[in-house]
Image 1 (cartoon, rainbow, N blue to C red):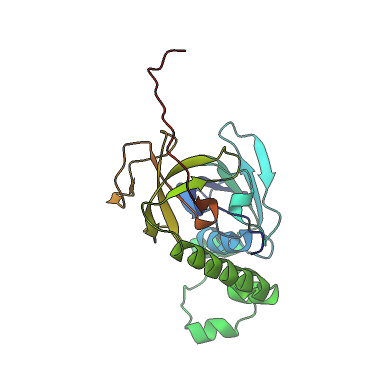
Image 2 (spheres, rainbow, N blue to C red; image 1 turned 180 degrees about the horizontal axis):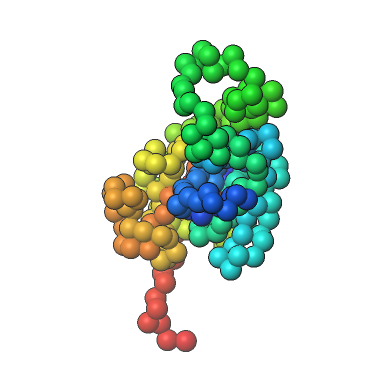
Length: 241
């Protein structure tokens, strides 16, 4: 099995601002698993900017510059972007200005007509082989998804396990759920940790997937889980030292 980088398909809430001061937007929610190119596509529809000329900058809650999203092929989650930060869109915004001025008539195109145009988001992504039009990325994604599914199918509920995730110490627990989680992509493993190192009680977004005390439950990717004979440790907090 090859080496894979596990990326949590989490979401981030960002304030949107633009280089044209009279354009403002409310806070928007984006998946961290989206590519910068696909993010630009969403922002193009939202702001009237253009994917081909758009520049994205991130500022923290104190309005200090954090980073620029400069690599269209990179995932949003690969950058140090957290909830509450501001995503600043730098562009000309000609389309939005023209629509708001009332100087041009609004019209709609069929999917066939849209596909024939050469100056659209779709054509830009196709020309530059970005997002879903990048064959290599698509193949890698499909391979990763197949590997993830295979690993998930070999995990057994109520088995002891060790969970290893980036930037955290290994944790022991018991597998309580394997499968899909509503609102999240791919396969997930519900873990009842031996210690209160989790995030919930087996409930996610109002749906109960398994039962455990609060802060003992968590969902992790199959890549992070190793089944085995891992005896449950006795954490006696009343033991005298």
